[in-house]
Length: 149
Image (cartoon, rainbow, N blue to C red; front, side, top):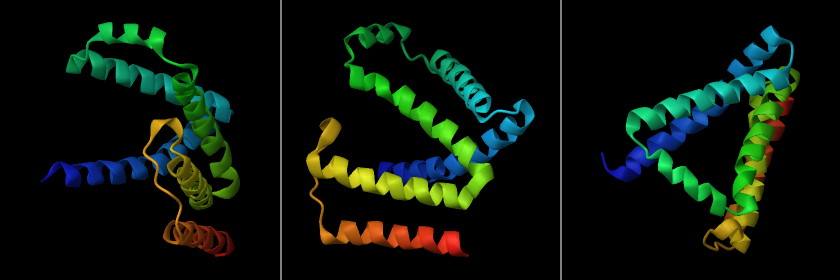
């Protein structure tokens, strides 16, 4: 299997994990009576898992010293992740997994067009074209169908 196929498989698995994570966090929220506490527990478990991975895989902890040179925007990832997990665990019991992730995907696609078009956050510029806009419209139609049926 070439690396490209491996990367495609990893992307599909990561995509499959997102709604599964939201559903499991929703389950935890029922036990702790709070979506925010469930998100906190989720991040704690994830932090422990990543720390164990770093220890087992031999990633040098000395590389953490580079964090002092990171710009403020680089720190936003943790805030964005916390918002995502807290929002997903809050929304799933209210609008369902399918609707939650349909809207999340629509939001992702809209922002990806903006980031690509303007080359924000250091990515290569990829101008918006009619095919990409058609893709957003198709995703939006999917959200409408999921909501309606």
